[in-house]
Image 1 (spheres, rainbow, N blue to C red):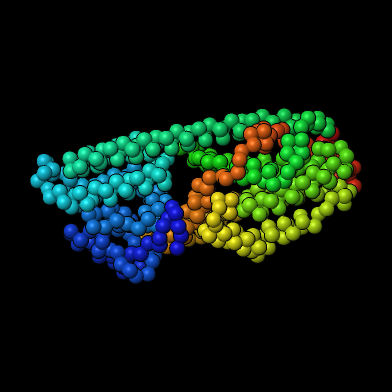
Image 2 (image 1 turned 45 degrees about the vertical axis):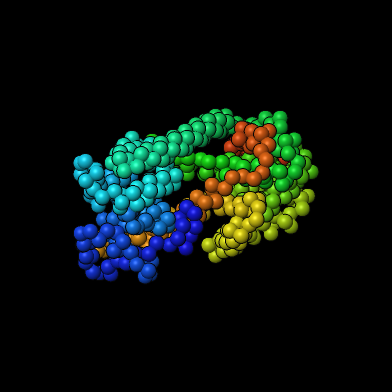
Length: 450
């Protein structure tokens, strides 16, 4: 069972995977395929599409709509799926008859709001599908066919299209900002990779911008909850944006620790980021927490034994234990479940925040997708797999749609996005300058870098 945007668990009565599926009887509609039995495990693509189509007396459960719209794109492009849905609607409601007044309008008046609801859910949950003009064309066509029954349908359609247009414009702005940050990061990276001497000192450091760990954790949460959207021309933009941000935060933490010339200052920065990580954990921001821990565990940082000896690190080892990969991240998964439960029962928005460790979420989804077939030997769609995929994706979408309850600090956010960070070579150079190489391997590396 999973909640918004997925709703309730879908139930369908389906043929046994080993049996031939009976053809739906004419006039029976999708309601004939529904039952109060166990959750669906498999069905033909045609049956799944049929069960997406509303009638005067039937509307698919919210969970089914989300699960099928999410997974159907593996078998059929969204424009083709919407075309099939419209064709079934036209056939079932006899919308191809002219004039329309020859049809009894009573069932149509019950059907109209339901098809509008389905189209609204589709535009709200997967708006990028409607960047294809064919999708908008199908949407307008079906409304054109039912509008003579009630002119209010046109008004509803215009409202849907207006909201869709606003959402797509927002998505475009998000993509542009991702590109700008990417170009900025690439430019900085190119310069830093070229360093053959100790990197020049960065004029500002994090403690000159923010001295309160809780405030920085709040601003990191702002970054994590910012909407990042995928580009139709480059499907992985969204994924790349998350990975790029995680890597940037890792290197930013390592840079801030390696840069100070004095051991006492480096230890102070370590203690500061330990406290920031703890605040991220308390907020429910596990992605920033893992990035900070990863940055502190990078070799140029972890080799600074004299610096670590000066820092109070007991809290750090507790946080490391929470994010320990042992047992397939058992401790983290337990903490994530706790945060998810807190989110569901919370009285304030601050307690509703859940930001999972993104790379592990992607790994889980990848292995679920690769480990289970999309179709069963009899050709049926393995819907049980897609219910689980929808649960994981739907859960993340719900968490991601959370509006950040913390006040923005533009100076801190600007710093996080734009401050120069060192490449791995730059970090090693700064690290060796701070604490001299201890063995031949480190001496050889330092010599090569210089």
